[in-house]
Amino acid sequence: MTPDSQNPAIALEGLSYAFGAGETAKQVLFDISLSLAPGEFAIMTGPSGSGKTTLLSLVGALRRPQSGKLNCIGHDLHGLEGAELEGYRQQLGFIFQLHNLFPALTAFQSVQMATDLHPEPGAEANDRIRALLTRLGLGERMDYRPHQLSGGQRQRVAIARALVHRPALVLADEPTAALDSENTQIVLQLLADLAHERGTTVLMVTQDSRVFESADRLINLVDGRLDSDVRRTD
Amino acid sequence: MSGIRRAVRFSFRLLLHERSRLVASIGGVTFALLLMLLQIGFRNALLDSALQLLRQVDADILVINKEKDPFLARNNMHKERLYQALSVQGVETASPLWIALLQWKNLDKETLHPIRVIGFRPDMPTFLIDAVREDAPKLKRIGTALLDARSRDSYGDLPDGIAQINRREIEIVGSFPLGTDFEVDGSLLVSDETFFELTRQSPKWIEIALLKLVPGTEPGPVLEELARILPGDVRAFTKAQLIDRDLAYWRTGTPISVILLVGVALGFAVGVVICYQILYTEVLDHLAEFATLKAMGYGDRYIQWVVISESVLLSVLGFVPSIVLGSAMLSLLGWSSGLPAGLTLADGANVGALALSMCTLAGLLALRKVRSLEPAELF
Ligand SMILES: Nc1ncnc2c1ncn2[C@@H]1O[C@H](COP(=O)(O)OP(=O)(O)OP(=O)(O)O)[C@@H](O)[C@H]1O
Ligand SMILES: [Mg+2]
Image 1 (cartoon, rainbow over the protein chains, first blue to last red):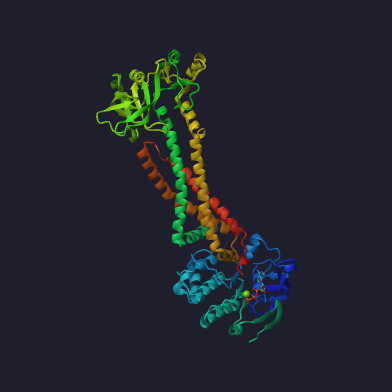
Image 2: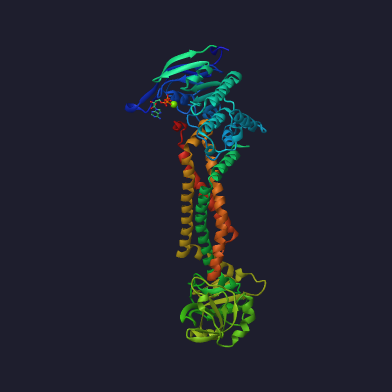
């Protein structure tokens, strides 16, 4: 399966983005062209402020694109609105820099918020939640609320919430920043399995050079421009 | 499970999570509802007490001074009207009623208190109250009276059964249940002769004429005939008509009932503000989390259901204690004042509906914040 043999999962062409308007406008992304194939696991790096999070939020349809082409898993993100926008977001798994868990919800209930969006008969969803939390080392803590969990455990709950519904595209913003090396490996393995076994496209931002070897692609962003795009071959 | 049911489940989890905050919230909603319930209870007391005398007279048709509005206002008429009314076909009896406001002296404290003295003919059908029908013959002896058993304590005790009214001594020979109102602390029933003795009023002037019809007579034609033969200074009504007219008067025509309505509106406004504060803080404190939900693909509709469901839950949780507290406080008031202060099932339903709309309105206001929420605010 070569990236060019079928429709790309992410296709950016000449993408630019600026915060603000007029005199005070500050351009943070410049003419970025990039294409990820289904099942590719790409890691994006770059110095702080280079625009990585901004790029992820554009791909995740959390911001409106301004100029350039932006097509993801069959959707043109220009002018995406209402039910179509919600439907697109539901097919994504977004892991944020901040975990943003509701204090009122247990780990299980937080992850359930994701499966609730994809109703399926029977208890299959709940089984999947338990299996995933267990794989992430939270089997004993499914009924704990965020205040009873460590930072790393909360981060893993948020990761489970982003992955449990088997999204077509995973966008992860420094998902392993709060994790120790053992849990980092577990999460990376999880993402790699999703990409290689289920054909999930993964775009992950990280500064952690220890994890580069898991990726098929290494993309480097500097000052809002694509600096390098290396396909790794084992 | 449908989307709405999931939203409801989620809202319960949110609301029930912080117990101390929940208790404070329920307290606030209860307080606002209690305000409304008490105003409604007072209003009921006003309506019921103002109408209790009219409800207890034994009459199919009443002839009164045309200026007399409400029923408890004092406008008398010439006694001649009684006989004119009696001459109409279908009228079986016509009983006069005299009413005066006098001063009752509390013999312990030497203080004066207003009392409504009602004169009637003991041998004529006048009241529907059993105790009065039984004891009426006792009143034929001049200087005797029946005292309202629900009179306020302000009248004091009567160790030897002799009361002082307008400096005259009156022997209390029995009692009957009526109740106080906003004008007097109680009522006294006396015979016509005792009434003239006490008040020095002329027998030529009566307050009300109570007509009983021959059984089976339709009131309509009798009313028409009365209107035709009676001079323009009086008017005839069926008892039901007068009750309706009085209800309308007390409901809308009086400053006090308007004040009580304003009280209900105020309680509602207080409730909306309290509910809004609760729901708005709830949303504001979890702005990033709600934004995350939107990033996950949850729509505004879902978050609306969550907040609306929280408001409904709040209104229900506040409603129950407010009804319990409100009924208890009103019966305490009724017991201590003699006013018939209470709540009907319809009042409960009305306040329930008010609670629901109060919280929903607050929820809708709080939602304006969510609608402007952009998931990009997460960064
Ligand atoms: N909401 C915003 N309004 C204005 N400028 C912004 C906004 N968000 C980000 N920026 C600016 O855009 C640039 C890129 O920010 P971005 O968050 O995408 O960088 P990043 O590569 O994710 O950095 P980091 O590694 O520190 O997370 C930065 O200069 C930042 O100051
Ligand atoms: Mg960033």
